[in-house]
Each structure stands twice: as structure tokens, then as C-alpha cells.
Image (cartoon, rainbow, N blue to C red):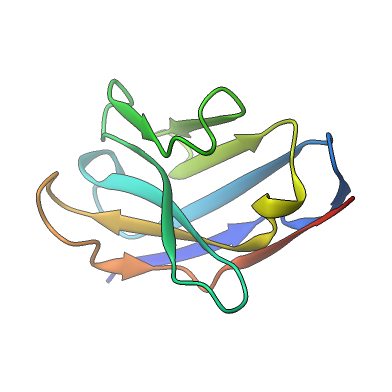
Length: 119
């Protein structure tokens, strides 16, 4: 059974930074593709970033390219999202997700962590 727990959200001023963490509980963390998604009030959940099991492949939504960096530490069963130069439109609940193959749907989701950006 896989469980994901996000942390690191909070209130930050525009232009500031936050680092989100997602701790994975279960077996074979390094075999899972991990992703970050976000959902703002009244909007659909959207893809933010993903990373392969080895960390060698990373993908970003256009809206966060150059500002956000995804990484993982397989020894710590943790995936990170470093968010720099935050904008008010980045405010949302951020969710961590895991899937076992590149082409599958994300099977597992965390409970989310709130990011608020003040202008």
C-alpha cells in the first residue's frame, strides 16, 4: 500500500520561494514516476511537473518552466518541488501523485498542501 504525504506549503509573498516535499510510504519508491499537480479554487486540477524513477527525466508545465524544479531522493523516499519567483497565480493546493509506469494513470495521491501567494 502506497501513501503519500505532502508538506512545505504556506504563505509567501510574490517573488518568494517555497519547497514542497512529498514522502512516499511503501515499497520500491525508485520504480515510481512521481508528479506534482495543483488545483486552485474554481479551477480544474492541472499538471505541474513530473519526474521518472531514476530522476533522469523531468517534465514541467509551461507556466512553471524556469521557476520550479522537481527532484527526488530515492534514499529518503521523497520527491521535492522547489518553487521560485512565485506568482499569485501559483496559489493552489498542491498534490503529489505516483504511478508505476510512464503511460499509466496516477494511482496514488496525497492529501495536498496549500500554497498561498500574496501580491
